[in-house]
Image 1 (cartoon, helix red, strand yellow):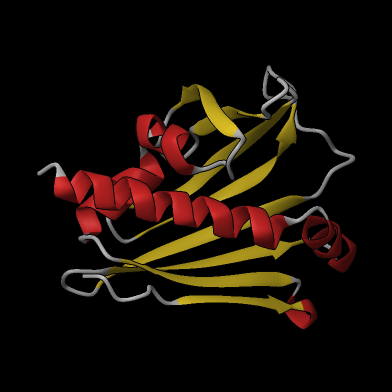
Image 2 (spheres, helix red, strand yellow):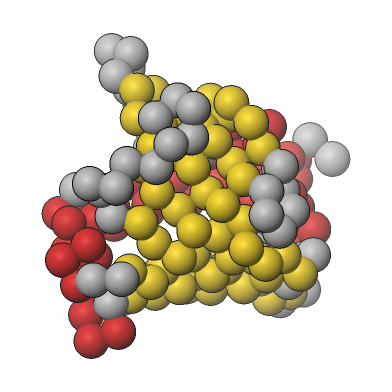
Length: 169
């Protein structure tokens, strides 16, 4: 269980996509819960020293997750994920974007479609994430804002959370 997890991060400009393939050393039900329950998302989604606070979450098609990423000095950035499809413990998709504290989308910032697929690998779980943008400029803006570094740090937070959950069982 101590092997380094698989991590691939590929920017596909031709298709206006970011493709992330990430393995977690934990069983599928535990990884699924960490991606779909606000109490767990709040513990890993933001890169340290930032943290996340969920305002509301309704994990169902047509529902949404409204949350704030809060910096160490109190700087706050709101985001909203509108869930499109959900196949329990297999996949979900959501339209993600920056917004205000009431969930009104900021149309000056990029929005993206996230398609997350979960594959049971026995004692580990593979998560394949395809993030699609309407325009190449939106993808490039996201990369320039430090998305790769921030998302990678968040996924490392998830490794820590899952490890803690496994050792406490």
